[in-house]
Image 1 (tube, rainbow, N blue to C red):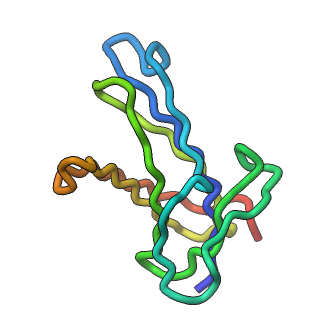
Image 2 (image 1 turned 180 degrees about the horizontal axis):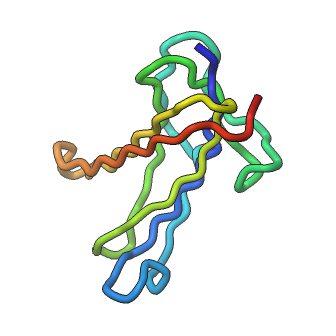
Image 3 (image 1 turned 90 degrees about the vertical axis):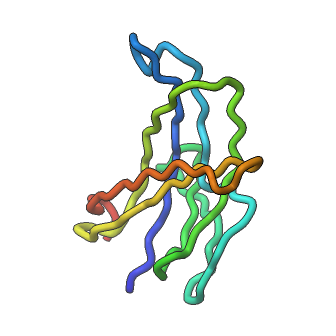
Length: 122
């Protein structure tokens, strides 16, 4: 299996009746991870990537169920929406699963699955 690069920039905005753009925004970068699960193969690590947001990405994902954990603190309650930027080898189907876990109640999770086909690497 070929590894893939996580050029991850999640922008989280508060959604309201008017527009997502009307509320506060929070940006989360993949390289801010504080924990990971690497099941073998290439090491999961940050990589200088000038075409990525914040000039950095995370590489080394080459097995199913590998992950990074990125802490996020929301300053206000509300309904949120996200946008995600990721990259993969040309024409290779990838799936990124975002799981938001409440530290106070870990059983409370919000899961969002993003599937895409690589369009730029390779």
